[in-house]
Image 1 (cartoon, rainbow, N blue to C red):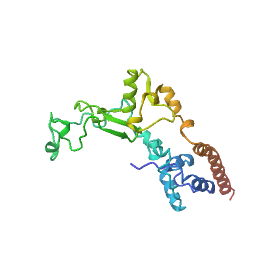
Image 2: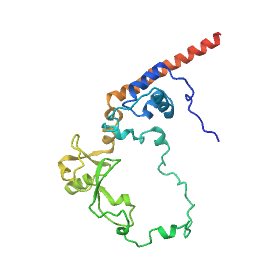
Image 3: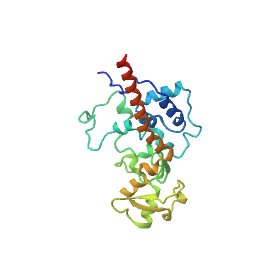
Image 4: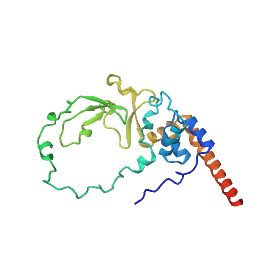
Amino acid sequence: MTRKSHPNARRSWTADEDETLRLNWPRFPAFLIAYVLERPKAAVYRRAAALGLQKAEDFHTQPLAALWNGTQEPGSIASRIKPGATPANKGLRRPGWYAGRMRETQFKKGRPASESRNYVPIGTEKVDPKRKVLMRKVTDDPALFPVNRWRPVHVMVWEAANGPVPEGHIVVFRPGLKTLIAAEITADRLETVTLAENMRRNSYHNRFPPELKELVHLKARITRRVRRRIKEQEDEEQGQ
């Protein structure tokens, strides 16, 4: 089975595309530029290398750097397992079967979590790298998946002051008051918002800077120019 190539994988780079790449490569990730130019991400990397382009020194430390790690890439989103999907390994488990030394190294039933080499006690705090919030371990319950043994500190603070979070709402920091320091997470810094409101706050127009909006708007103009140039070339070839 051959892999289907991108429709524009063999298209030559135009002067407009090169200029767009030069202007945006220092500040924006390859997958966004590839989306605007309608090219494979690998082609964007290769062209940037051919032109000798470099990322800005603060590329990985700017406020939106967390969005540039690929988690928002359309290909990444499309490849994720969807809710309700059948697991690929459904029906393949064989109870009582162990490969190699698996039986020796597996956790034995009833073994306390404290015997794990990476065990941390209840009350330990850490920063969730994806959600960018402070988490606190609240239980060692072996019936819970490890990730469910931790809770966001800001949610716990809000619930201690106000009770359970209303259905359809989530707890968030008030604008400009977010912190990862436990002592600074107080109820007056927090509020509950509906899921719809949270989505609006994190929508395209609110999340992305003006430069990125302009980058996306360039897409239509670049597409028109490329198509016009291709048509001109086709007309020239037919006239010969």
